[in-house]
Image 1 (cartoon, rainbow, N blue to C red):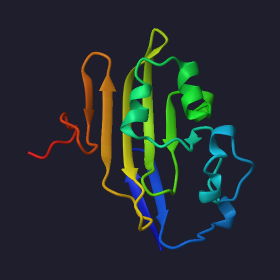
Image 2: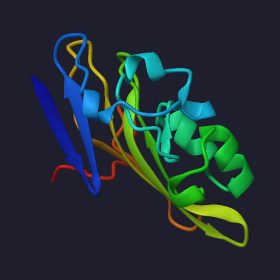
Image 3: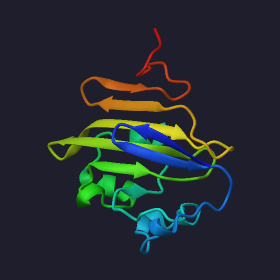
Length: 155
């Protein structure tokens, strides 16, 4: 059984059980930043925005004020269309934060981070959706556990 999670412009598939392989999606050799976790992502397309980097809050904070070169190094892939502005974190290890991140630059540094993630669960499914946003002027909000400034506060 495959479960799909839809985010803003991003679809995440999770599989129950082991060994889900979709032959028509099997692809070429992974990029450098994909080799570390590609064994658990059989059939994943090695697009330049797919990274094995977990989108944890600690990692997302490393993107704040980063240069394009620093961002590309952190993700170890070039980004969508070869530009370091959009990335997807893909992994099937419990605790891995799958999702996507959009970056905006000003004067050569990241000034805006917008990410939507889910945590891969022990049962093979995606956990609740969590937003992370940072703006160089407005600051940070996060739906990750322990955050005091929530992005999607329930009122």
